[in-house]
Length: 101
Image (cartoon, rainbow, N blue to C red; front, side):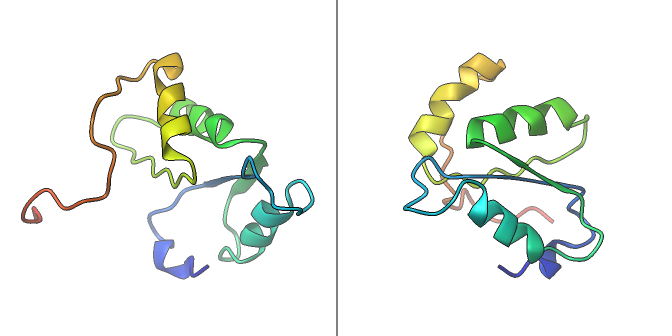
């Protein structure tokens, strides 16, 4: 993981285990990822992506950007209404048109 590119605009990392750890110990992968973050980075490990999104939303303030990287997008999107968020939008990363500068 090359996290140095995020230095300067990432205030905090909320890392989590996958539902299917594929034989790894609990929190093994997120703690490995945390060791690759730049020195002085703020981070925490939570149990599931749903927890990470909830905490991220709770901490976000107007003007903040919350970036979510999900391994199981359908499951995560299905939890959004319970967090008070609308669904039905296209959550893909497909380009939507020219970039606005």
